[in-house]
Length: 111
Image (cartoon, rainbow, N blue to C red):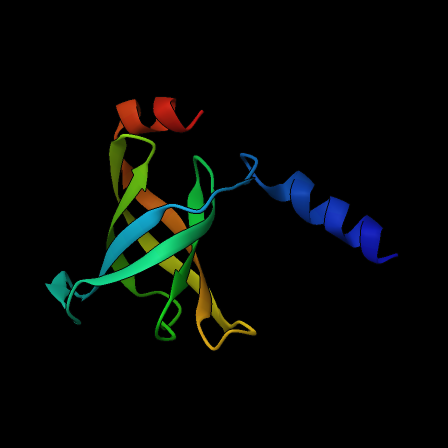
């Protein structure tokens, strides 16, 4: 039954997530103002709709971020919103981010 539930989750995603370890910088914002210093993490997966980023702190659901991801020899810039942040086995956090703004060029690149 767990397999079926996973299949149901995959079907709900607008675009497939590809496991991809890439350097990422993120800046949490609150009401448009920078809330924390720029932090570095890495993506665990990425898609046209968002990314899962390994972060050093738990980020609250709904926090807005400026995000830069190094993919191959290109920097993808986007704004996003934290959907969830959960502690991983290594003491870091897996933070799911939905892109709210990303250029058409970067979307094409992610395809």
